[in-house]
Amino acid sequence: MQRVLFVDDNRRVLAALHRQLRQAPFDFMFATGAQEAIAIARQIRVDVVVSDFHMPDILGPELFALLRPLRPDAYFVLLSAKAEPSADQLQQWGVVKYFAKPWDDEKIIDFITQLGPQDNEGP
Image (tube, rainbow, N blue to C red; front, side, top):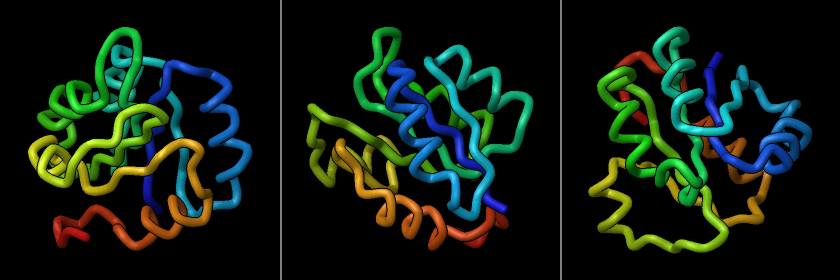
């Protein structure tokens, strides 16, 4: 089962994700910032990281750069209400998908499900 880490400084966003995606076929973890996300990734295998773009302590792509050495096989997904990065930026950051807020629950579930388990075979 996929282990998905959601990172957002807004607890209401995390609560909404938890509530709306609770029937999804993965294990969820939630972090409210970079330090908490890094601590989780150090302790638990994380297959997918879904992060907000703008957080007070860090930008999503910067967080991905810190997490990548800890979880080199993880997929990185970006959520944002403000930024709309180009395909070139997403590729440069190693982001496999971008979702605008408000998100579509089914699209997120379908996308994460299609990634499959982390067995180094890729998406």
